[in-house]
Image (cartoon, rainbow over all chains, first blue to last red; front, side, top):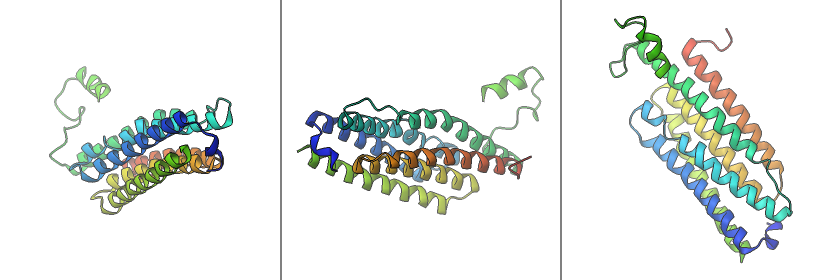
Length: 131
Length: 93
């Protein structure tokens, strides 16, 4: 907290706003992860923390180090870009794995595979691409 | 004045993110199937990354930023490897 003494009031208020916004959104996403009933619904909840939760905390960190260092600091945005790019990839792989496991066990609450049904050959790749 | 505001906001953010990590850990322990546990681990990684960033604001050092970046990278690799394992039964084919 040694550098925070020369932080002006407007910068402190902006840092606090973005910090509390990011932390609260991460908490809301995790509460959704704990309370939603099925896995496919739970998959959506933590993305609240990875989109605006990360964005808010990263923006607070950028404002703090820019104002206290008296020079523009942008390297925190690496974390934001990286998390934004990788989260859809990981969650889609996880959803595909869960769908594969549910279909292999024959659970009734998932749609059947596009290639295993009676769909014509032209429709099956389109349905796979739309997933 | 600004030190006081920043101190209370940082303490509140630490508490909020710690509660979020505890809830993700609860889902990881209680999760009925393996994919729930993997999703809980991914959320735990993201929340710990945010907690390290708030530590970095509190201490004014950039070493916490590097730790957060490494956690982000390793969390991505770990979740992809676990999802691949759930789908195929092996990681490297």
